[in-house]
Image (cartoon, rainbow, N blue to C red):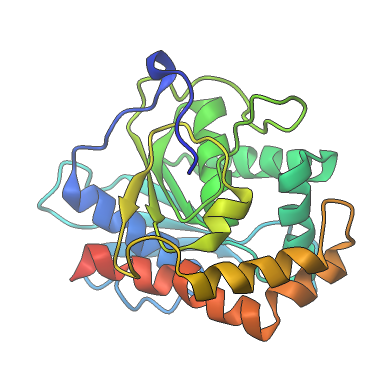
Length: 253
């Protein structure tokens, strides 16, 4: 399982349970903008949708904290969505190989945080990796959920954009039963916090499904092959473990 970087370069814990809950809610809501858990806690101020039919490279939402029980009221959170279209599948493939395309997308994510003046970032899966990379460049705190570590000791695969994350409050939360973490995970800007709501470790069945998916693809595979593998029956079953739908319940119950 992937860990952090050097101990002296870690991000720090949030030490704020309510803020962590709000970040988890935003990372969940950015998939559909349904407002399911927003209630009186958050307001969606702005969003951009990536549906494969427009020029947007990323899907994100900007949320304002409404809760009056925290000193963060009025601050803004930007949440990034994970993979959902062939375009974002290409981003995921490039993420694994450190390609130039994903690097250009990460710069877009960074520019959006500056444009909207947010104080916090978050995301799930590929979106969580965006959040970590934004923190590495701009020092914006936040949280990532079931995401892949953007740091690699083997250049040019590392996608961190700087070391501004050092000492910044940012947490990484991972599901121990998620085999996708085993495939892509490397290192994060903070030591991961592991959750066991889907079981203690990866089951033999999940490992077999992940093995079948890996047999269909490699780093040279076109995005279409990866997309087909992740949308297969095996991929759909594994996504139930990987998804933010289950992870968010660890924070809102």
